Length: 289
Image 1 (cartoon, rainbow, N blue to C red):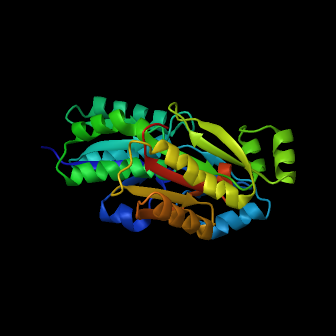
Image 2: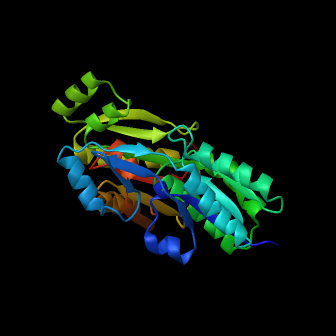
């Protein structure tokens, strides 16, 4: 069986040590602060990025560059690998479409190569959790095709539930109206959102106050685990420079649900640019999104 590499986007928000351990290759997304373009990893420390946003800087984001995707995929093909690429949700970015186009062209040029692109319909550590599941399957000896089939069959069980601290960032992304953002901020409304079966951000409910919002994340998680819970599974939590809140939610999960295995990491800049500082997001396998 030909060896293969798992690739994904920098939006997966997996820790660097994890990526190195399992030889996960990344396609970079980019962001722009006042005309200066940055890569999505290692050019600005997460705290520096979020401090810039707190100071009023408004970043814009850019999808994967086709030339860069071609270069990374071609290097792996030339090394003799097939590729399983797990892509950022297509309704949220053009990166999946770009990766699929590059993969198709490279396979036409290299008939012995195989590149499978899976549209994760996930974001942040939701994409990362799907990568983690692929890694586990690979470690257990599953083939590229078997893993791709599993991902397609199970990706809509990968649940995202999150809250943001500042509605104005969602307004900039077209998720709420300007009036809703202003009024919501004045009365301390915190939205709870999720990613639906189409890979789009959808509001679930509004609550008053930060602590209630964090508790509501776990409430919504419990609903999605009914009849599905595996206490030996793992939960991923990503955050926009608010690790104490992420740790508080992790403890709630351990106490209320009984899942003890939790991974916490920063939300990457190209996701954080739209969600803002103070975002907390949960990712887990459930019965429905």
